[in-house]
Amino acid sequence: MATFFGEVLDVASRAFDADDDDEDYEEKITQASSPILRWSPGIRSELKQSQDNVLNCSLLLLAIGPAPTGFVQSYVLSEEYEDIGVIISGLTSKDNNSFQQSLHTDKSCFVYRLKRRPDIVVCQCNARVSAEQAFHWTEKLFSNIKKSCVVILASTQSTEYKALEQNQTIPFMKCLCSSVFTEKPSCDYLPQPNTVSELPAAVLNHCQVHSIPAILYMAYLDSVHIDAASMKVFLPVLDNTFLKEVSKVNGKAEKSVKKLVELNTIQNPLYI
Amino acid sequence: MYVGCPNTPNDFKGYTLVLPAVSVGNVGQLSVDLLVTTLGLVRVGYLHSDCVLPVCGNDAFSVGKDTQGSLVTTTEVYYSEEKKIVVVQQRAPHVKGKQNEYCTSLIEWIQSYQFDKVILLTSSYSHERLDSQIQGGRLRYLATTALQQTCEDTLQNELKWLPLERRESVWGKSVGDSKQEDIPEQAKDVFIPGGGIAKRLFVQGCKENIPLAVLLVFCAEGNNVPDALTLTSSLNQWLNLLPNQSAGTPLQQWKMPNSWNLLFGSTYDKTIY
Image (cartoon, rainbow over all chains, first blue to last red; front, side, top):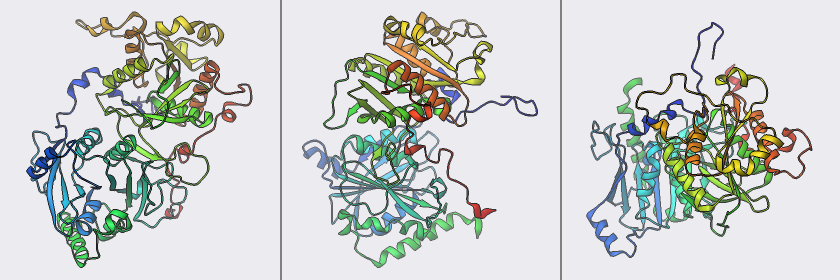
């Protein structure tokens, strides 16, 4: 396309990537690893004993991103829990994995189970799972968890939210649910034309296609770094039937939220 | 790949399948939106594949302002028993490097469900047109041999559509380029820049003898609603989907879904000025 000054620019299409025509590309597909799921030895023996290699799970709570994982850590995982598994995806040969989600190259997502309620499984996904890996990541997670209710917590920037009138108080929360989910959601539905992509969408799509009751709570935040308000926006989710008994009001939650915010601030010294 | 919704029909033998390609201006996908909304097609299943990036949202085809919370996923299949048509809507691009795999899975699904004919809706960069293509209609078509046997007369003589002009590569064939020899005669020198998987699917369709047609309009990125209306109206001329074709302009004939609101994003915050 020629511009006003005569130079010729490459025209880019929002729909179509010219690279996709390159047939050699298929051989150069990313060298990053596909998702790997490892259960703890205790879980592996439980699975062997079960009928269809399936965990006894009535609720799967999946938190994706710093604010949701911070919320779950403060309000749900405040009591005793056990590590039962890990999913690692997207590792390349140059990555170091700390297994504590403290390195920026950490690619592991941990799976926990509450000791008091072993039928509630919590997956904390603080490492970014790419959109290309999201499908297989989801298939791995659901390979041993079937037909339970699924609650997904995720967050994104408030600038992604499209509406005629921008009169929402930020942060706010919207939800999407699969067609077999019958409970009343804790917030309004996400209106058209907004969409959700990447891992939260992959998990919800899996649940929709396989008729699993699932709900996704998407928080729209205005802060890049986590703060108390970003985590507390998820509080209405605790009214969910399954989570009501689990999350008793505890003083530890406030402390935990404060600690997470401080930790995050230390890692980002730009404005001190 | 295909997962049917519970309690829905699973036999589409003899139906026409309409698919979009993710192409310049998203014209094929906009066109499918118009078809599903206007004809009131019902969701019958999903194409659950790792070759397409994940996306989901609410109420893509609802009418009115209330949000009903009915989820839509990445690639869904809609149908109408009355019109004998099955329509696929794809809402996200392919995963890089997985287009061939997607085309292969699609062909297998088409063969196993025995569709009568398959129509791929796509678009092509208007700035890549030959001089001869700049004037006249912007619609072109391609048909595999299997489809030409039944529909060539309708397309060329009745509808008077123009077949897509072939384009030989200006650089000639490179030495040892064995891939060119694999391509059937019918699919040689097909050039659809910006057309997404159209060329790949057409080549595979020729190899597997699928009755496939590719319908495209030349367009550029921008407000592609008029291009979608052109493409859908042309498709309607062939398939006779609307009850009364002569009534009104394309804009009046086709209903636009709620998902087309704010097509170019939210309005800006006026308080910043």
